[in-house]
Figure (tube, rainbow, N blue to C red):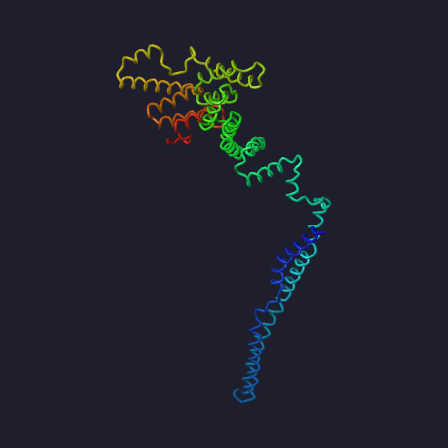
Length: 382
């Protein structure tokens, strides 16, 4: 019954709000010529008084009276012509008022009875929080309410963090894992979850912050496979192919044969091994040979720098001919940074995106490398 009383009260309030402008619009407005008509009538009375007092003779009074009467009739005709329009407006206002008072509440009631559930008992939020059942949203709300009152409950943050991750609330998961680590101390599980949340937040890129958390996890447990995997993936994204391949191989060697992550690791190993086979003798374009290294040892600093510049130019020219080489682009970007040619590094990054767009896996790896080296991904140097 309380529900229906509230509905009726709200409906009445809305009706009043809608009716008031209509009532003001329906109020009778004075005729636009009503003042003129009054003036003309006063002039007729004044002519009669002037004639009786002898101020005007009869002929002049009749002429003036005829002119005033003509004007009075003209004003009256205009008002009579406008009367149907006024009546129509009043009729429309009356219909609008009837619609607001009768039809609008009736339509709303029918819609609620058809689409709503008036027979369902009330479900107060407090009662649902006390007995959430299987409603995950209520469980989350209950946990958030508890943590709002007890922000130093590390166990609560630790429980809520993976729930956030499963529900796609990645930013909240990062904050929850961070609070759990801060309040309860670092463990491989907490640091690994924190790193995974950071990686998900950056669209799969293993950021510097995530790598730091993973290394701390390995300091606690050197055999933590999750940390080893993501660190190896980070090396792969940075273009450090040989180091990444070695890291993935170490992970396979230290994992049980039936471990669930082994197939994924083997896939990365196959990709890295296949990429290495694509270059002659396993060397990427532009790599110095053993003879080049021996010759460089006998050079002075200026000649050695000039030799490096020549190798970089050679690599750049090869990439122009065959741009489908992500490792080559990564090496070129790094080489420009080593030579303090940050503008050329940014230009090389921009050129590489023509072949490896930013939304592809290899494009993301190049962007991650650029961010690590301090090059803005929009092509401007930092």
